[in-house]
Amino acid sequence: MERITTVDEVPEHGSFLFTVTEPNGREEEVILVHAADGIAAWKNFCMHEPDQRLDRGVGNGAAMRDSQIICPRHGSMFDAETGYCDNGDARGQTLVEVEIAVNRGDVYLTDDDLTFAHVGPIEEDDGLPDSTSHIGF
Image (cartoon, rainbow, N blue to C red; front, top):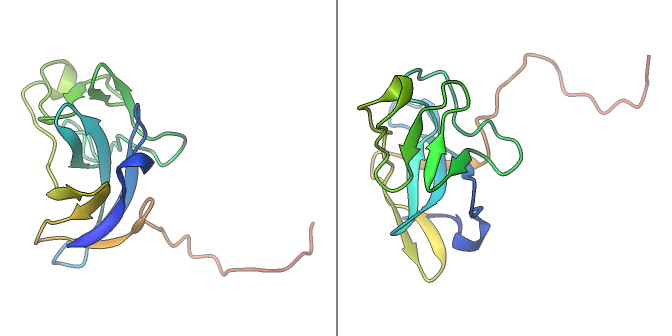
């Protein structure tokens, strides 16, 4: 069990984004959201179009309305508790669940197939060298 964050850090109307590593070494993003039964965790992509992230890593995370996670591209709405979508392009599909547990206000990753990597989005290497230069052009 790996600690991710606290319940208080999960926005009431948004999501908390973190990155996990799958057994094959591939990184995936996961979102935590408030649901009727507490906190739920879902892989951060729309089932209709897997390249479309629900939480783009800015602001309070994924757009939500009436306990539903909204795909920013198609407007499909996924139930925060079940992950099921009954409208739009993703109708009939369910988000990929990630197993978590909440204990004394802390949220833990309990999914045996995933390893907690870090809070925030996947860190992409842009191929550019890091620079600490103060020279401007």
